[in-house]
Image (cartoon, rainbow, N blue to C red):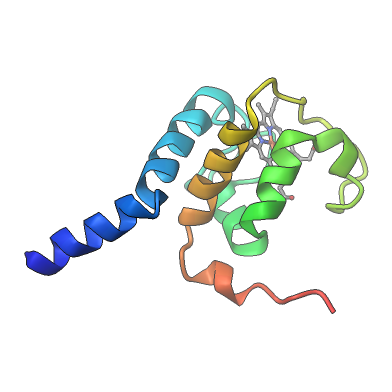
Length: 112
Ligand code: HEC
């Protein structure tokens, strides 16, 4: 019990819990119509998979400006709209998406 309290205090102090919770709300309101999180099918890729293949920074970058990034991310066309959200909201939603696969994301190979 003591350990759990300590862990929660640590997570809260690093703002990790808060960002993930806020990011989930951003996801539900702005992304869920086009992106599933449970391996489902929708217009955009499932975020559980994205969480394996992309770093948090890349997710925030694409979410903020898909039009400038789609060729870099390997797409031949861009169907995702540019969403009118705050920078912090893009960071929070990227935190949430990354949190879907907390261990696998460390296995992403660094580009040489
Ligand atoms: C209207 C549908 C739509 C909405 C809403 C939408 N997306 Fe997308 N998203 C797409 C599509 C389609 C793609 C595939 C590439 C493209 O068309 O730009 C995509 C691609 C992505 C990618 C790149 C994934 C990869 O690794 O290849 C990320 C990251 C992403 N979206 C994040 C978000 C986030 C975060 C939100 C909400 C804040 C969001 N999207 C809202 C349709 C959408």
